[in-house]
Length: 191
Ligand code: GAR
Image 1 (cartoon, rainbow, N blue to C red):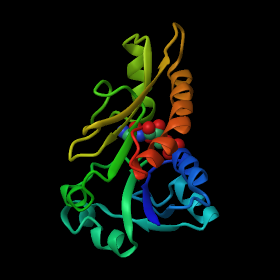
Image 2: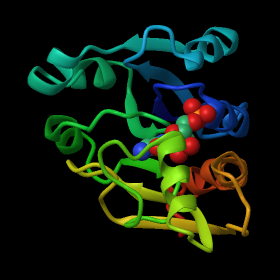
Image 3: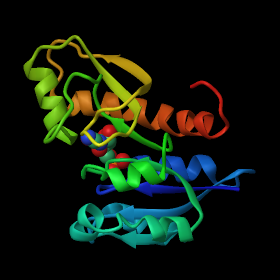
């Protein structure tokens, strides 16, 4: 059984889709939800689903052991960032080589980096009059929204679209593709 940890700081809609996708899966189990936000919506999902949670704090994450022993003790072999807004420290990356993936709500390398998350991304896309946006799933390195690209999917940004409208289109792509792409990676298939 491969055990996954989902790192999330927000509402957790992507976490929920991943949990749903792997429910009763033959070889994958969502074993842990990790968050840095004590009140995050994703924690309600964890409770409802009966999944263990780990609350992390800055000092230990960035200047301590990055919680690597906790993750190893849980038998985690793969990490999915689903709306996790902290950088990932090198200690964690080294402990999970090519085994940490992130989803970003834009077509990277555009509209990525520090401060580019959630509605800020969609506002920037609309303000720049982009004709398309989408999602990027990528391996995680020590920089924000950086690392080898795994998968992208696009949607149209139509004239008159508001950031909220773009957000809806992008979220639809996230929910559709993220769980399937993660499964393919875990089964060593090309997404
Ligand atoms: C998702 O749209 C994800 O792409 C984004 O946060 C949202 C989390 O939503 N991540 C980033 O912006 C990372 N830079 P959710 O909590 O409903 O899954």
